[in-house]
Image 1 (cartoon, rainbow, N blue to C red):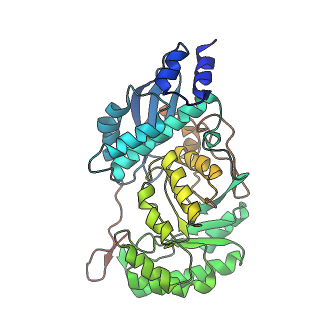
Image 2 (tube, helix red, strand yellow):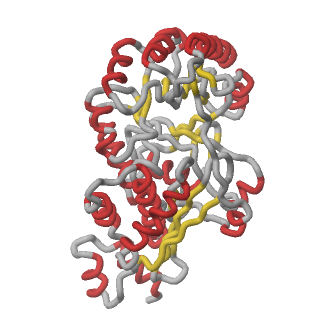
Length: 406
């Protein structure tokens, strides 16, 4: 038997024994993690932090995404200094055990930086497992719960931007309608112009096209209530990040004040960060990001919590094609997931970065992946030509010089 065939047979066997014991019984050593590499590149204003996990099986490796726009170097360091020593030598199919050990054995638990590092490792291990078995990842997560995945496109806030998305076949798109000029937040203007802009877009696209709104944490509590109640008649798909994370009471106050569907979750992570949103029905949509939330397995668990409380899931994803494909695999097998964020890039070098592979989107829906594992590869030569460079976020302020949220 060829070693790769033996590997498939080994991994396909019922998990009646620990991996090492089962492998020993079959007369072959278990497949081990031998190295973890970090590849930094910059396909747009965001960084891409790609994790490459190598194995003892020649030619078998997996890719994960650990991108963090603000802390790319910190995440890279966390992977190199913490996750790499922790996972090298482990069996590649000990995915749950590796996740639990990395999270629980950290006394202070994982903040977003370590969680991104863990998410990248998790995604790469699922990629390895799918490749070894010759099946897409979603088939290892229980199989498809739908035939295709509805996508919404990130666009600008003009009618032309939305009409272009509609012409491309999308049935939904999202933009940030809260107006900020030269980093200055003027509450009456921001709310008034945001409502006006949304009215213009709604008139342009018609009643049956879904409009998502990303408030991006800019709004104060008073602004959030005024904006959300002021757009109820325009029937948005949802208003995202209308409040900040620190106080769920603020979100509950907004929930009671408006009929507009609310969404949040891109800055929350692990199942623990989403339980309150769902159990208290504070939002209509949760938005875990597979890169921040804890990886493929953890986002699958978050989706199960949403399903239990009849909350819909609309995963956040402005990252790389690696994270897009990871999201799609979870979406395919998660009943609660009804729509997926998508930020396609058409530049040729970005296409070359992933060999032209990745999501296949037709008429606003992504097809189920059919390749083994994640279904996308990274061209490291192209990545090296577009290295990391610092990206600074804007510094929003109010007229009196006070710091504005976002």
